[in-house]
Length: 84
Image 1 (cartoon, helix red, strand yellow):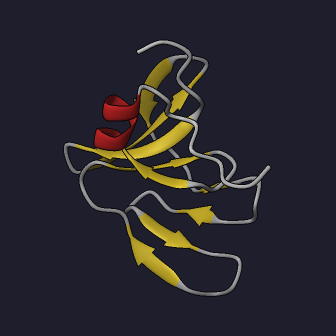
Image 2 (cartoon, rainbow, N blue to C red):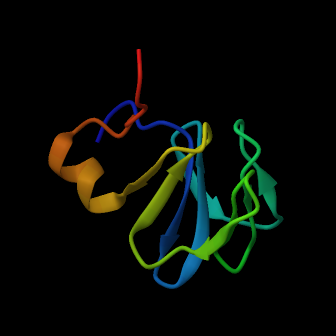
């Protein structure tokens, strides 16, 4: 896949970070552009206070848009931002 956006994803039970086309294990909690916090165990803490745990194949762009690895492969467009 080309032009993959930066994101965090759950792969083989571990949180991974894809930045600048390179995949590496997540080594610290991250705060995304929309204020969502992603923890190393896959917990997502949304800006509204809700939280959930990422499952295998779940992914989130650095802007905070939730998607899945399967959706990215199917559409060929990993950037699933909504709105104009």
